[in-house]
Amino acid sequence: MRILLIEDEDRIASFVSSGLTAEGHAVERVATAAEALGVFAVSEYDLVLLDLVLPDGDGREVLRTIRACDTEVPIIVVTALGEIDDKVDLLDLGADDYLVKPVAFAELAARVRAAARHGQQSSRTIKTGNLALDIRTRIATCHGRAVDLPSREFALLEYLMRHPGQVLTRQQILDTVWGFGFESASNIVDVYVGYLRRKLDRRDEPSVIETVRGAGYRVRP
Ligand code: CA
Image 1 (spheres, protein in one colour):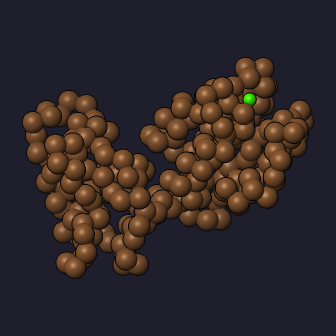
Image 2 (image 1 turned 135 degrees about the horizontal axis):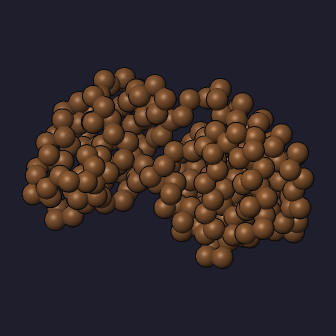
């Protein structure tokens, strides 16, 4: 599994990371909330391990943000005793499980296996408004209707939907969806947004992809 480990204490991070790596997982470690949201926006993970007290912010915010853009990825909160005052609150925010430090590795490994089994049973879906994308099956659904999208259109829609409400410039979209080397003067992004609108939009409703003049595009959150 690809595991994102969000932990600012080096000692704990290396203990957890080396243990999980030995169990055959690929672990990516970040130490701050900002880094966590940065990597989560551009990569996919099968599981997130989240420390609740981070140097640049509250892990609850990270939890809420990750959950808002990925409803399915299992998230295990790992926290020091006394940092959680309301466990129910944590689960309500979208955590699947939590562990209290100091963590025994055997217990952590068991929770990771349990969360992974649970995660495999559900499909990985991202949703915004009336749109849903199933990342595993590559099926897009709009207003409950399955829409067949070629891979580039799917990638473009996925990128926009992973940043709901955020304006993405044509250059950002080009770099991410087409890769570097495309000329920024190219209107290919506009052309593909047009393809998506033709397939997804309803005549009586605003477009699912909004044009922000002079800036770029966004999907409504
Ligand atoms: Ca911490």
